[in-house]
Image 1: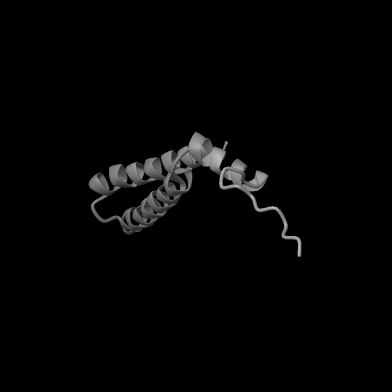
Image 2: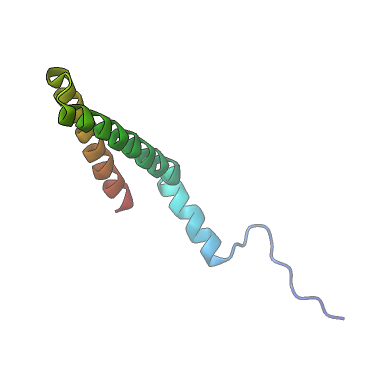
Length: 86
């Protein structure tokens, strides 16, 4: 009975090697993308809350800057996510 030659531990298949190289070039890329999505979702929910306050006319002088800040957070997270995806 002939056994197929066993791979040594230093030999990896090309797909696994490419994945490891990509992770070495950009560590924690998936984790950063997760945080960008989570913070964008949080900013979106906050923007909806402040938009509802603006629509109701409730304390407009403080609701508008907070609404603008939430929109800025969402825009920043979208920018960072796109930058990370390149």
